[in-house]
Image (cartoon, rainbow, N blue to C red; front, side, top):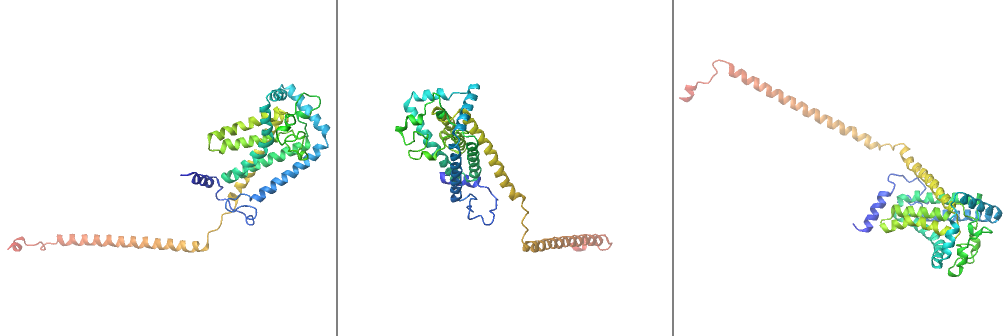
Amino acid sequence: MDRGERVDRERRAEAPAGLPTPPGTGRFRNPATGLPRLWVEAVVLVGLYYVYTATRGVAGSSVGAATDMGWDILRLQQHLHLDIELSLNRWLQSIPPLAVASCYYYSTLHFVVTPALLVWMYRRHPGRYIRARWALVFTTLISLCGFFLFPTAPPRLLPGTSYVDTMSHFEGWGWWSGGASAAPNGLEGLANQYAAMPSLHCAWALWCGFMLARFARTPLVRVIGCLYPAATVFVVMATSNHYILDAVAGWAVLGVSTLLSLAITARGRRRPAEAPPTPAPATAAVHRPAVAKTATADVAKTATADVATADRAAADRAAGTKVAGRPGLEPDVGQASG
């Protein structure tokens, strides 16, 4: 079996069987797979972007509150002995090649790997795509609500600290802006500088890692999927863009979002089972009794014939017995032989 046939068999196995397509949904869903059409997915992405734009405007007007939130998180981490960001930041700054590679990692993979895996799930694992997509959508929406309600300054923007903005320090080595982290030069206004809590980078990275570890066929790709979330946590903290509690919060948001996606998809799968059964066609109801009556008549005729045959056989045996028992009717052996 070649690779194409194996992929087709997996698609058929993963596709939700027996789920009827509601009337009028062909415009929004592919009738063959039941998945939303690509333009519907594009509309969802555009909507999420505008929601993000709204949170950016609110965060820009509350710099004081974002700075206070950043200090509160840092003090809490110090109390819990989790303040490792400064040590990682200093260590990364001492190795310029690794620092530049981390800058490329931070400014590229977050915006490339996640959409690429969405397309991969849509094409290769359509039966699992809806649940995976909803988990990512809920993660993004909850995170955007966090950015709106709790704007947080990252370590690099806390005044009076020793954190070095790695992206700004190595600005000349890439396309990113020195004043807006991963945003390209000239597009600084598109970035929300105070969207640290929860870490959307870490949440998306864990989602990507799970998809690769769960559905990839090559063992090497599965290993990369396991390492990708950990590498992302290191990069976002070493470049002083996030606290470790930001990563923990992002993972918690992904967990809640996964439960929500499970609830939605499970509800969708139960609906066809609750629908009333479709009545059988009228022709089937008419012909089935006729067939049954014919079969019954044939059985009855066969049984009657068997009984009649048995009666005749019994009568013949009785008649032969009577003839053999009457005197004078025995054959004369002598005469017959003479």
